[in-house]
Image 1 (tube, rainbow, N blue to C red):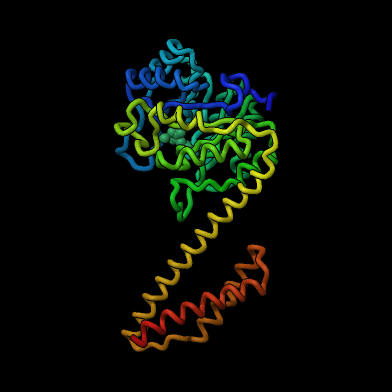
Image 2: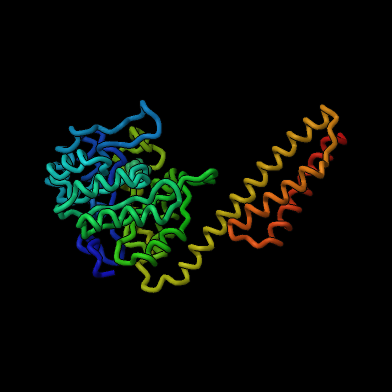
Length: 353
Ligand code: PEP
Ligand code: MN
């Protein structure tokens, strides 16, 4: 998409934009060493987190303000445009003061409209590209809303970063891709470049190559990949950061950009279906485990396995719930009958033992 501003930053043709760098800026030497290695990989934009939102207190929360001049040195010595995450207006002010070229709003911030609005207001009259990571929960409207808040405050160059969504059962990933959500994002607002972050999605080094190449096939405009000069020793997200040599191998293996990604769009939807089937089966297995516990309790307390009153209530409530979720009435009854039958079978097996 030649009209997108990301084209300005792209230094290698036939490949999407590459934003790479460590999860966190840890020291000046770590940043400069990583930057010198990434320069050889054809990285277009250098990223590093300065203020880190962490799930638990006590984890490394970023080097903070003192890392701003380190990032400025990366820019000066290696000529990279540099990017960092901002979560409050104070971060914006400091990042701008130190010449940061691109800002992004993280997943834990984009989830909060008040926080996004404050950041957007602090950017009024400033010309800088701002990327918005998808909110942690799979809520397309909230993601689009965050981008709209920036646009309404005059930010012309906005981008979206798909980093996956937190879910009850993330399977092999740290965050579920739900590819249909970024595809719908693109359908709704096609003029906003779409970047994939396979690092936070995959959570592990070995997941990154396949996620990155899938995103490219789906026609994403760029990739944001965490890379560290000594990934095993990284102070945050150590298991998902790549050594620049490994990043280079992944980038070299990416197929050239496709003009027509329509077949891959279907496979994007299919990947979601495969993943959701996995979640359904995993939830069914958890449900049956609980049936087993109930079976043991009934056995110990001489309670009969089948209780028609409970069965009637379950079916009635599930029909109401299912219909409110736009599921067909007969389909809900069929599915719930099958599940209940299996649950009774499991309990009978235990009681008869
Ligand atoms: C990051 O990019 O380092 C980060 C914290 O990502 P996210 O907001 O996607 O969790
Ligand atoms: Mn990270």
